[in-house]
Image (cartoon, rainbow, N blue to C red; front, side):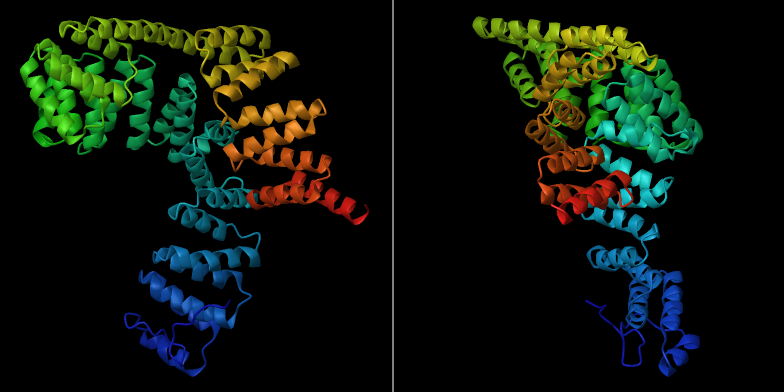
Length: 530
């Protein structure tokens, strides 16, 4: 379908707000050409009148439908005018007209993200990277999408293997740091975020995330230093000041009450400011003031379980046990898994004369407390195992990851890391068992599904392999290697059309993928000579 022309019979844009310059009007009324409309479109673009520019470029494309550049400018103008849906078609046409032009893919990636077509956006980002592997825009967009999809391993694979980490943008460092943090690789997260902040010292998101990671590492003083330096550059950033107050409270800094009072004056109706000031008041044993602030905080945001728990604790200290019970039970309902809330609820129930219920809560507390201690041990073992793997000591890594799994048997990540270490140690049976357990714990762990499929392929179990590869691409729709493995397995089962469909997905994500092209050609040859 050709472009719709919003022009007069003379070719001049018909939109009443699109006033053609006098210097161009006579030329367009005489003998309009694609070049003249293109110049008009550029002029409108320079005036930030993007809807008018889109009309002009649409007219140019009508006269030169084979021009990739004009078609791109039409789509770009529509996108800039906020007409996202209308921009998609000309941008895709521009990409088809000039497969080596990275620009349509970059704009398409942004456009598709805006209309929540994330999988298609990821395909455009990958297509852009196939043309320009160093495209900062594409790396920013793809890493953001992968992170939002919780594809943390894919994010790390995309950004963490760069031979030029100094070239990463602030967004790339932020996304990589967050991916490391989400996979409990806190030291790596801190390293990446610190390097990013050194390169972009004015980035408040990097400073905030680095401070959070440092707090998780127990380095509150370092977090304090990071945020105080950032706030010197962003004095009016309320969210950053709130995070800084959290850091000061965690580190028990004497400066916390002064900042808390300042923020309360600045934002008296901010639920988080109220909650944090209550924390300071609890520490100072000003329980009635804490109760008032917590009640206000909960009224503004009833879904924050920490506020509910804190209010329950204060009410318990004030001997209002029925109200305390209500708040503590609400905190648990909202997802509070901390052992302390179970212990406090047990005390409240005991005070209300409900001994049996108190004993049950005490039992839950003891189980939760042991699980918390085990998780802490597991994190330490995982970090040590990661270091052993990095140094090439697979046997030591296996031992450390086994300890981590023993400490935290219901978490998929240490089990998957154990499988990778067993692979390096050439323990095929152990690797397979660990992978199956990781998948049982987290069926959406795409890397484990893919590796299990690979093992089944080696064992000649193509049907089982197909099932695992399908699960991998379902969990991570942009997982190229899993798609290629699925296509190869389907070809091995003589499922030619399904194999070609899988390869089509690969080439949609990465048009220049050599493995996909080779396999596609081989399948075509077999089909031609059955």
